[in-house]
Length: 273
Length: 274
Image (cartoon, rainbow over all chains, first blue to last red; front, side, top):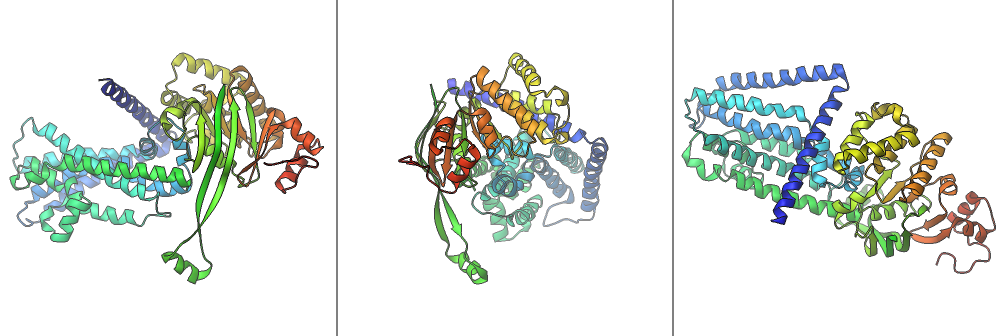
């Protein structure tokens, strides 16, 4: 019981710190007034363009291997949710090798009484990009309406669980990539490569052949960030088996990546890099 | 009460030796040559509560490595190290609650935010109560004279102003032990004097133990009764400033230290550096 109480207190504390960092982030964004106004507009503009682009794009795509355009749109919309969280919280983990390891910013992180990965994430986050999540929700709702999908109340907790799992996969992949910076000096050529691969997750995975599909499912499991979980919400029963695995894959991948991170920190503290 | 206890503390780094030329670089791709460097070599070091110790050495002598081990950033290769009752690198998150750290070359304040906002964030991180926070803040405003620019963004401060804020930030949670790595680097004479006064005051009234590395011997003369000198990873001298001068028969500390860095032995002292 004591352990549970300690954990709960610790989670509450990290949540408080997170929101405090968040409000500081907004304040620092607002220090340059003109900049801030332009940013708000450009973010809004960017997300609207995204939305319009998706609507127009899917208007021109015919049926693809048995997937209607509404279904593909729905998958894409679901994908934008973990992608939004990734853009907001994990994208800048690519600063880790250069800024934190080589330039030694990690020294400052390690003398503070907080989890090191948590600190790096809240220091590098771009909160405004999280709004992409709403674009994703809008696209999903639109597509669902168009294909007359019937919703029930349990689709909401289910969808949240799937989206959380998908977000954990993104977080895991980028934590893993960032951790590699502890072993390999210099800029990471892998980041753009992985980014490109991640983009395949937003299309029906059965359009890919053997190896690509295997990689997207089991190695860099980006198929679980869009396609598989979305099929569950669309009631395409033939993929339930994979789709419902999303939270498990997310947790396992995240746990593995976090383990690699802690090993990286150990290495940093051994070598001082 | 003993705050820091180090016995046989050693840190080795494995350094990758690059070969010359294109051919060398190519060979490096396949076989790598490593060289082991002892950055800190078998150091014994004891610090008691309330001491203010100056830790000096030439560039690359091993000062920063020692400080990094004591602050829990680096894990020692061998030896025993206990600080504040903790083994710093294990239990890092608990241990760091009780220490304050200032790196002269690296800011711990948020660049775009007003100073007070950084303090508020640190207040939450170190779980400082509002009463304590206000009380300490007022105190620092008084003696560090930072009240006027608490509401300015850090990037607008001069180096001297910023360093005073860094000190306040490192002391907001009232640590029992304060590590300062070159806190006066790049400061003008007046700013240096201001910071020295403050450190003296903190050391005396709050009984904060302070470990200070510096290249400015003026810092040492103004603050430290005890000085530790490290050279090539080895502890050359650890004792009072007066005795150091007496050993060398020379009052000018700068001359003494210059001789030491050049590897000279003090006249007529046996067992120097052992």
